[in-house]
Length: 296
Image 1 (cartoon, rainbow, N blue to C red):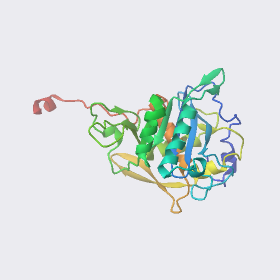
Image 2 (cartoon, one colour; image 1 turned 90 degrees about the vertical axis):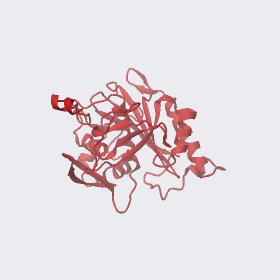
Image 3 (tube, rainbow, N blue to C red; image 1 turned 135 degrees about the horizontal axis):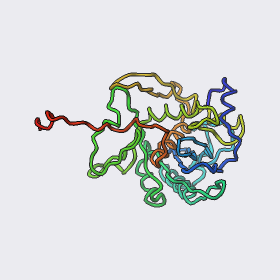
Image 4 (cartoon, rainbow, N blue to C red; image 1 turned 120 degrees about the horizontal axis):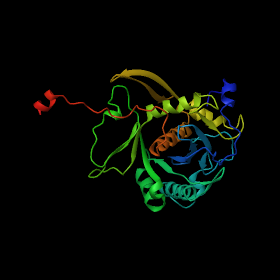
């Protein structure tokens, strides 16, 4: 997705497919939910094994009737959808409805049906409510998610010490939270994954490893604002690597569907989707010399 000024490239991201339908070449379907007081933002992306992706659906709960809206200005809120509940009650009720609906749904796929393989829900806000929903209706497909902005000055996740009970993947890991106050979750390096998502969107349709969107040109202008016009980045160096560090623009525009698409990519990686030749993010095995062994 691109800024409105570059309409030719922006229009090229629409693939003309029907919303909600998964291409036959896809093997994984992932979903992400971003939690807020007024709305739940979500997106679903179908993936081929090489990270060629297709946005098959995105939206909010409650659904909005206007083509352009902001989280701050909307009046069609969770509070109106679930009257008589307090602020936390409406978030939990909305999340339960969204999770149960989508995890129980069969999505049409050319040649058959498909279900969501992994659903991630952000716990940057109301982690306890999200954990309660997982226990009630999320099952094994749902997992809590925490985004971490790892700068060039910090150790990359590939350098983290492996502890018993942890799972480490490509710029994400599942920490062992036993004897801590944290809920079980996956943590992801969002600076890496935001850069990764923009790289998928920069690939021409038809080339492998790119990302396209259902529908026709000009169907997704608000999504384009969230993805292409909400954050900026600067390149920094540290620990022998170059990192694009992402920050929200000063006016703090909505970036929630950007977060959702990023989370869908992390979920795909958790399901085994890989860019051909992918090696980054894996910890190199240390080769011990005889001197190392003697010093021990």
